[in-house]
Image (tube, rainbow, N blue to C red; front, side):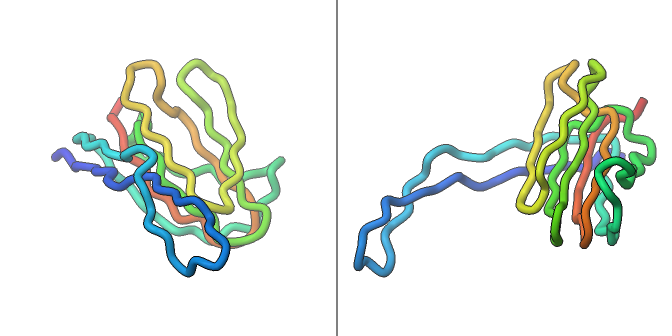
Length: 128
């Protein structure tokens, strides 16, 4: 059974005007994508892991992660991503991390997280 993942919204901004309580926001660019995936998983595990020994996110049947949406809630939160070509990347995760990688060859093959607190995430992708 396929599951749909939809990303919908916009990045908005407004100029800061001294003395003005609220200024109207304007769209900078839209955030829109929708696709069907074989597997979707979400969780919010508590973490107490250092970057040298991160918590491996169980992919549970997802061989090619196409979507990662995550929020770290705590100090020192980070996420380590391994891409299909073997390249590893570490990103801060004390805010929102959103990756949509639909192109063949751009998929994520491993994810781990570190820090102290809760790491909320959703992953979606294709089976092996």
